[in-house]
Length: 329
Ligand SMILES: [Fe+2]
Image 1 (cartoon, helix red, strand yellow):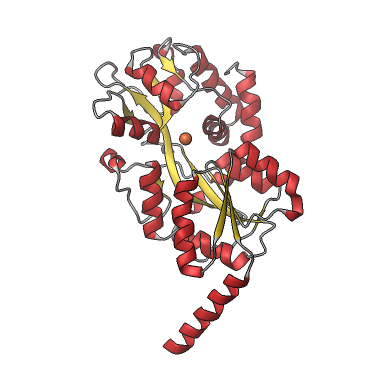
Image 2 (cartoon, helix red, strand yellow):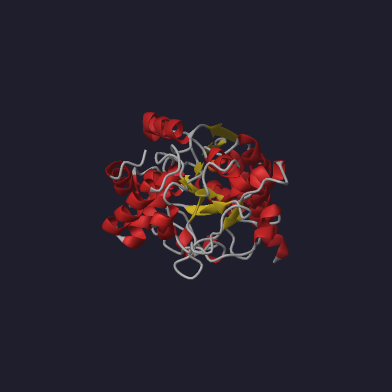
């Protein structure tokens, strides 16, 4: 039996090796994807070409290339990106048999077009030496008048806030989401920040008392400056759970190496790669049985919103419309 298995494995590997070069399209840093590509080569004999571009350029490249795109897998950093690629038909369905036992259903596409790889919380940040946030339980609380002139937000036109606003629409309905966002915009302490890091610096410098940021930007600052005063609070722990967003991967519609693509995605889900990527980005592994090993482990576990990522992604266009309606720049 063992001999038969070995032979079967050899036939599989040699079939993969005959395929064209394996091509990974990503907006994630090449250096980190390269580590996975190296493991993939050791496993399958296939060399990878990594095409790293900002998402908008990646999308344009896929559109321009059409059916002749060499892409085998597409690995991006955000729900709204995966949702857009799915909507535009750039993915083909994958076999979720192995992945479904690793990644929570909420973080997998309902049509099996993509799966989460790592995830992050977008949540409350504040300086505990300056601000008591015990009255803030959920996102909606940031719209209350007591926070007038005290809130920092990042610009609305980045994927993290597009996804967050889409999640508000998904959970609250359009009208309620509009009133929450209107209240938040009315509470702004200063102009919207150009990045999460700038927002966190604003809080550290006393320009605002509270804000919303991805947890890993705080982790990066704490790693660089252990005395950085800002902390986070996971929101909505008595309700729907904190909003989470994440990187995701799917098999490109154009892939001629579907078996290899499937193998690559399954490799991303292995414990060692999950922990590697989690440490590299200070993100949480999508594999539900794993806990992070970097400094974020000290922040403890939390309840995350189990709203399905595909359904959140479907609200992305409405989210773009809503931020304009309420004057959120
Ligand atoms: Fe980021």
